[in-house]
Length: 217
Image (cartoon, rainbow, N blue to C red):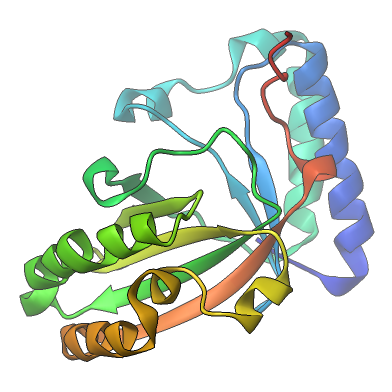
């Protein structure tokens, strides 16, 4: 969601109110919020589903008593938006590292549009070259997802966790696992397979997110 510059404060306040009501009602529809640090200034609201039928659930029954207030706040949030879109991506576990329970401070998101006739070949390179390099680099997070709705069906995303910009002063991510020459060789394989690729950085916004309660010890 791209928020109008003069309505950022309103958007944040209304989102916090929404999450306060959801917390009061013990809603289990959690989401994390991320602010872009590059590209267009926007907020990404990320939710996870385990199966498609969960998208049919409709209004959250646990928030029934506050439904009118939630609808009002959500309408006001939309009024703050210059534009918004929704995309649905499917995480591919066999092309990803196991998901960490630790929320990263930042993420680097690589969005790649693959040539349709080269799509399978691209996935093969991810499996045989990219994923092993991510493992060798000791990455805490490497998530690979394919676009299903709201984006071209040959678009993929890969997400790497970061703590700070300073990590980029040294070889980072897949490059760290492969070394300089190995990484250049990988790029030589990938470039003929894609139309374009774009990298953007996002920072986690804990005060705007609604997450499951931390497990008690």
